[in-house]
Amino acid sequence: MPIIKSAIERVKTNEKASARNSAQLSQMRTAVKKFETAKTAGADNVEELFNQAVSAVDKAYSKGLIKANKAARDKSRMAARLAK
Image (cartoon, rainbow, N blue to C red; front, side, top):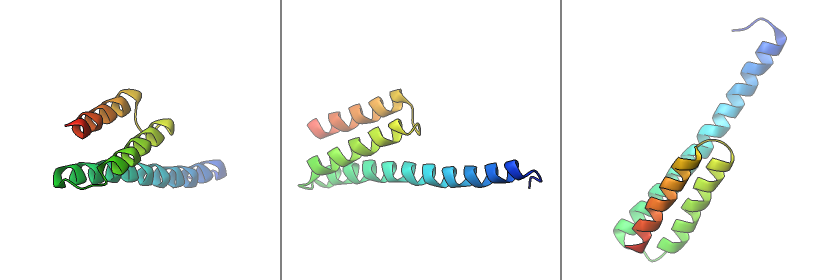
């Protein structure tokens, strides 16, 4: 544990940011998985889940949690899966 006050504050800030980032990533992964399972099961609300998953991926990218290529790759795969 750091002794200097600014370092102590930095640790607290980093913990908050880490918790926020991991929650956001988890939310994105959950949205993608919901879409995948709904498509496999043949649910009727697949379009809505697709839009939510794409939105979650875009939000994660805009916050810097994932890179541009991963966002594009994930959205492309989901779109191809939706079209099948």
